[in-house]
Figure 1: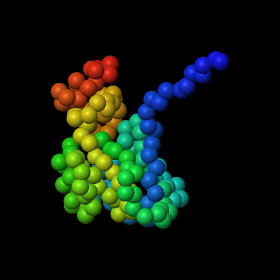
Figure 2: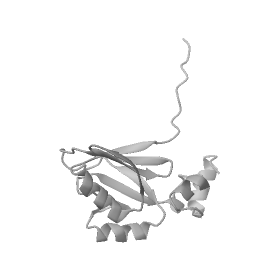
Figure 3: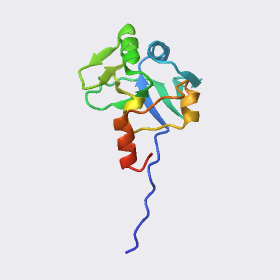
Length: 148
């Protein structure tokens, strides 16, 4: 029997979040994060994150997510915590920084320097985060996986 070569995952292009009100979602996420608006169409808006994006889609009707979540990477975790608090976000108990947006989407936030995730300097520069440094632990993880 011939073996089938499977495609490799190479990244995430975007994450789609359902929200109840698109204008309110843009206001909320704009209070918390700096981002460029990639584009907008009826019922949808696209927030650029360098070479990736978040798609906000109007029409969420389901209850808040308990375990299902996605993770964002930021340049400064404590500054993010302060922004979330100022925006009135629901902070969730966790080992790091988790929050639920006003529509129940569960988001985990990690700091770029502390994880093995890496962006090119050009992609970092596109979001105004050029020159970020990795922690020794993150560098070790990356070396062990042949990523650095």
